[in-house]
Image 1 (cartoon, rainbow, N blue to C red):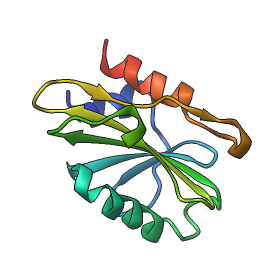
Image 2: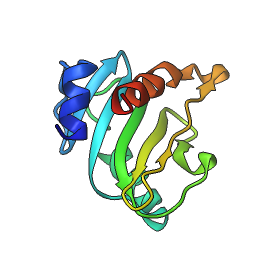
Image 3: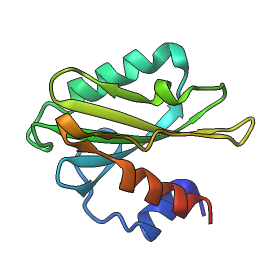
Length: 130
């Protein structure tokens, strides 16, 4: 079973959101997106801009947290996988390195902005590592 199917079945992810990528609402204002291409450090800004552009419609809440599950082939730091656009969008990556089998994630809690993805990241990690 591939990663996407495993998460959809075992999480379970039942509320799919209309979006160009596979996207599921896991809680109000919190969305899980499966990124189809290899993510590179130099294209993170493109990924963030794409998310911001494509999510400015009625399918999403005004304030949103995206958890992006994707693949990489390079090393990342914990600080490289969390982004805030300064207004209303918080993005956390759960990245799997296809070369070293390392996982890069940051199960953070940003209290003043009420962006909490800790329990969602931990749940994803539990499912994928059992």
